[in-house]
Length: 218
Length: 218
Image (cartoon, rainbow over all chains, first blue to last red; front, side, top):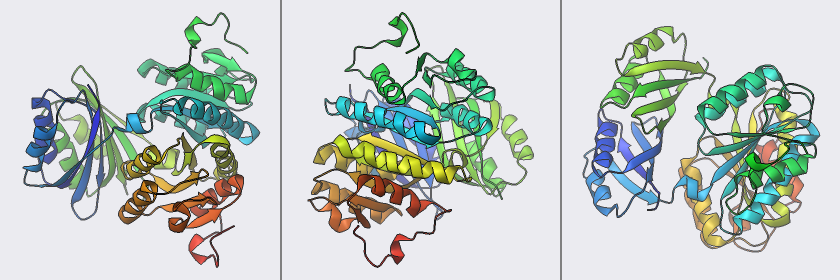
């Protein structure tokens, strides 16, 4: 059954969110992800990603009949629109080269019907990169992280361990000094290839399973 | 006053979210963004981005004292960690070139203390790109969109108009046939320069105001 997303425009009244989530539960539909934009004038937008929805016309009618609700829009889910995310952190000459490899490879998969996005935050410094890695557990749809630098270790290694404990995350590192290569699933010397392999590792249309590789350094 | 983010791990019980948001309001703190990850085992993670927080120790204690709440973590806000987002849609040779320009320029600003991310979804086709543009209004921190293709018009133009009506969004288009150049704020022939200008247009450390340009085609 398909996934769907709905956006509800509603007055910010006590109990509205509860009423909506209870309604959805009563239809046996699971909410996989929610975000709320709250505007200053007491109007809020509630975005809900719904799993395994069948016909939701009746649910939409029920939500629209809540007094505080002003409108309900139905969309494709963000997962179907933007897909899995390759995340790239690092700086200097290498970060854009990794992105170029990943974007070109993602283009080749997306043109065959997949959806993969390549999201890059140019960053340097142990503390800043460690904080950005740590915050990955608060982002949706993250599938693989590529570390694009020439020296990474210390707190970055700790942050990667923490995130890997919380969720499935493939980590690819350029071949560099520092502890990150010890914790990475894959070490790649060429930045373009690192980006390409990051996409191959998560693409449904690629035959490439990192776990089946006999070595993890290229 | 600084922005802060908190992650609350809580049992999924009726009224918990209401109780938490009411508590935060009672401290006069504004919630700018919320997202929830709901796990299967009735435990949920509630991420809240808080604006203008002073000392929040007392608020954290109050939240921890709610029975269903298991833990509360305090982090930097995603806005401080990943910053403003440059979004790039398009396919083929051009999309990675726009990204390369944007990433290299963002690296130069971020190294001086800014935070700008470059998020690329390689995409082709009027319907798919229009849907991706439309969904931008459901993403946080989006500041500028770059269209990296060689023919874009029709529904893509309509989707851009809709998003521009809802929120502040700078749109940069490569110089191409199709209606998008008529609605774009800036038209740039070179893809690398289009990426660089996208970052310049939103960077606090750049002196570049698209609205002050005497022409908008380069």
